Amino acid sequence: MADVSRKTPTPRGPLRGRIARAVTGLAGAAVAVGAGELAAAFTGPDTAPVYAVGSAAIDLTPTPLKECAVRTFGTNDKPVLLAGIYLTMALLAVLTGLLASRRPVLGAAVFALFGAVGVWAALSRPGGEPVGAAPAVAAGIVGAGAVFVLARLPGTATRPSALAPPATSPPATTPWAGEAPEPAPARPDPGPPTGVTSRRTVLAATGGAVAFGAAAGFGGRAVSDRRYDIGAVRAAVRIPPAADPLPPLPAGLHPAVPGLPPFVTPNADFYRVDTALTLPRIDPRHWSLRIRGMVDHPLLLTFDDLLRLPLEELDHTLSCVSNEVGGPYVGTTRWLGASLPALLRRAGVRPGADQLVGRSQDGMTIGTPMESVLDGRPALLAVAMNGEALPVAHGFPCRTVVPGFYGYTSATKWLVDLDVTTFAAYDPYWVRRSWDRRGEVRTASRIEVPAPFARVPAGDVTLAGTAWATHRGIAAVEVRVDGGPWQTTRLAADGGPDLWRQWAHTWSGARPGTHRVEVRATDASGAVQSEQRAAPFPAGATGWHSTVVTVT
Image 1 (cartoon, helix red, strand yellow):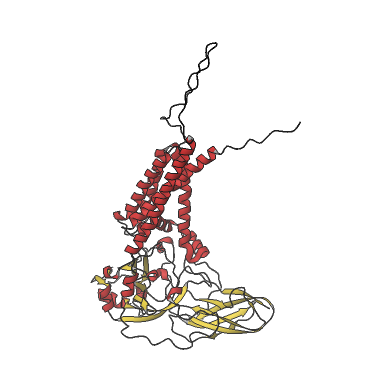
Image 2 (cartoon, rainbow, N blue to C red):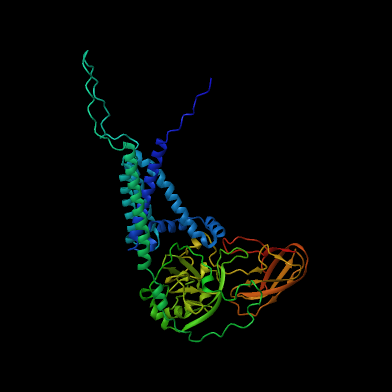
């Protein structure tokens, strides 16, 4: 006998129902995000709930995890964080949609809770104001309402509707003997099946919700970008020349080695490492700087006041404490700005003050040793770099620059406040997260030519790179191959102690095979760069940079 048994197909109805319920949660999230972005168009881009929550997440993230993110993703750490927030939101929205299908009120309550988290994030930011919480309130209310309505649509609710009467059949009648049976009464056309109608309703409603969320979100962001765009204002700024311009940089600062980066870093290539998810957009016409705290004469300066002061130039190499050995977070530029020490003396620093705390528009605080600011080094309130007004990403309209320190203790971008205080009285942002209080730059060097794992022909091979020990200067750079003897390199011209120094060396008679090349530097005080490997946390990376090349 032939086997006629067949596998019973899995019903698709329950799966479709679960998908529909999950989609309602995603649609509710889209509406919520769109409403938040639309409201943020009138309160500022940084008040959008996703950005407010992301900024709070950055503040709460443990330092080792932050360093891991910078090390893994580099300057893409912020897009990765935002992508993670959106992905987490989508997963929670799916779960909320499934919950709302059984208990619509609970689903709405979850969205209201999301809104409350956004309110907390907005108000917890330094300088947070109640108006900044408005986008989160709008997102919570609109999202809760949307998921409540969508969850009650036929086809998404998992409980049978109390309003639907049970289906009944007319009573059957039996004809008498000899009689013809009565014809069945004509029934009206029932139209499409109820399930088809429900699916169409859910599809139309969720599609409309997603479309509204997308339109509101992208539209709100576009309006915000136009309302708060300062590109034209920045382009209209006219920076006066320096009162006593520096001479051109000496010839011979840059060895003519293909692949070696230029001595002066173009603005577009200058590294950016900070905690700002959205760049502060400050109109210089409304900007002011307070100098307060332990001073005899507190000052309040407008941007025009700052530009009327004698401006100074400073050639300076700035580096980030998060830079790994041989890393890219370092750059050299010619800064232009007002003398920071002169303004502090004008304000009258009181005895006992040992820390200068800069505050950024976005709430970042950076503390610099007062003795170093006033010891004669050319510290600036910078308004320009490389001959143009500061780019927005690098602190427009004003930032601090103090040679000798990593950026986290010397370079406050988007500066709005200088507080003269003490180390005992106040811990700045990074110090509260256990970073070194002073942040003095360590001696560092790197090999840039050949590139890592490059293949080079046998014979004479050119090596080249850069070394820096800001505010001390570089006296020597040495290289060695495969652990052999150290060999002194040819140093380029010396631009000064606040600048990096480039070097080149001819590796003679390189033989075929894989080789390891190491580099170390000696600063102007005679201290040799430490061989001991240390991570950037808590006071900057140490160790000799090395690269592997294959000679063919």
